Length: 103
Image (cartoon, helix red, strand yellow):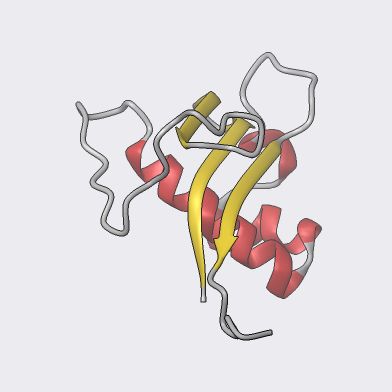
């Protein structure tokens, strides 16, 4: 089974550049734990962070264009951070457990 060790999102709604855990080029950082709590004041992007996972899921299931419009997102221009011309970017770093250690 795979375990997500890090996640980065750029230019998705209010999330200009957020990294949780470690990525492939940040091996010295601590990975996400099996139970990660996200806490913060109202309006700082907690729900947006979780919607970004839903957006990725919708992209894989429905395709990118449909995912931009799904769940009331309102299309690409509404989900890309305001005032930004760069693309929305996601990085997911995960580690696959060794299912067959004798091979």
